[in-house]
Image (cartoon, rainbow, N blue to C red; front, side, top):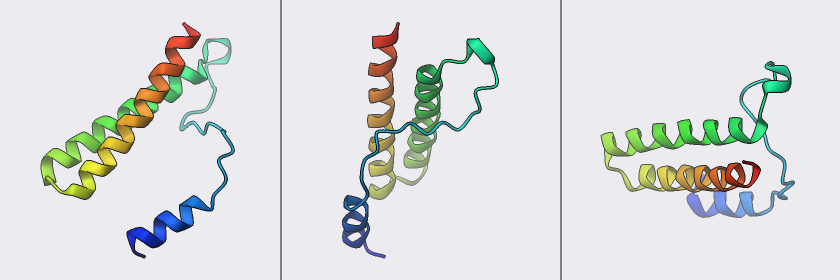
Length: 82
C-alpha cells in the first residue's frame, strides 16, 4: 500500500474523539486516565525518537514527529486537569 493510498484510507475514518489507553484502570480511585494517556504518548515518542536516531530515515522522523505531536496534545490536556 502506498503512502497516498494509506492517507486516503485514513481520511475516511471518522474521528470519534475517544481515548484508547494501553493499561487497565486497575488502580481504582488513584487511576488518572489523562496522566496515563500522557505517559503512553511520552513512551511512544521516546521509542520513535530512538528509532529515528538509529536509522536516520525520513519515515522514522515522520513517525517520531507524529508521536511527539500526540505527546504534546496529551501534555496540554494534562495541564488543564492539574
